[in-house]
Amino acid sequence: MAHNEKIADRIREALIDIPKVEEKKMFRGVTFMVDGKMCISVGKDNVMCRIDPALHEAAVERYGATTMKMKGREYKGYINVTEEGIKSRKDFDYWIGLALDFNSRAKASPKKKK
Image (cartoon, rainbow, N blue to C red):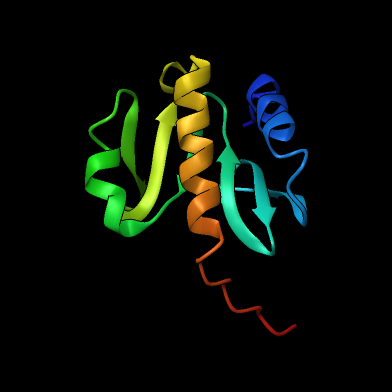
């Protein structure tokens, strides 16, 4: 499954002045790593934002937002947002802001030894 390049371009533009941004192919799409930590992923018709778990319940109340689920498990602090949920500049900026805010405090995943 390919990711949505239009959404990815919007995110690239939003992160252009952020240092230490790297793109990686993950989760059947592209993930934007900021300072070595997963921040935002782009899928076919959605984005997944890593946010402060304390803000999770309020975040899923927003239009187009749901908890990320993988293999039947819900992940608190990981929010899927539909393309419709980030259509307006205001909504898009809200989600990017939440993800970047938490990224500054988030811990990086431990590196696997090869």
